[in-house]
Length: 183
Image 1 (cartoon, rainbow, N blue to C red):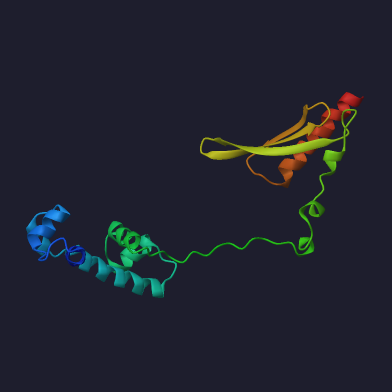
Image 2 (cartoon, one colour; image 1 turned 180 degrees about the vertical axis):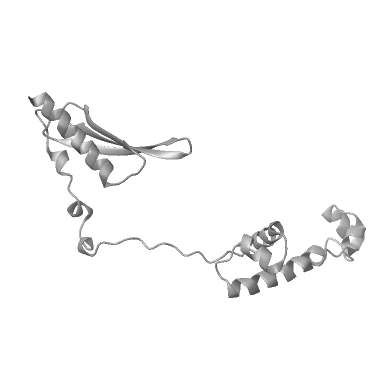
């Protein structure tokens, strides 16, 4: 940096002789700082080479795994990796694809039939949904069946597991409740 400032001053012909005192004043530092050799740069370069060597053997290793490998502090490894923009290889999940839907427009793939329906009486169209509730560090699942015409919940089921039994139980509850109303 000092050599760069000296070169700039010579090019601009600001000073015929770019003295170190003038350069220090221009940089806003004391003159003794021009002679100081930073040791951290050399240490960081050495650590960078060691990190790169580990990353060649184990490309997916991040700072947490590289640190024990080199027997150094993980914060130091993370600082050097950020400084030199070293990043581990990350495998990205492939997008799932349906071969039968490829090449078709998005509207052709799915048609929501219930958008076309307009129920004119109860118990013609039912819709369902489920949610989970965190309770005492565990999840409890709630499935509901709703009548689209009345917007009334007609079937519910609660379980510790989100599986087929939960959905079927909500459906059976809805059937049982609607049969009692019909009679």
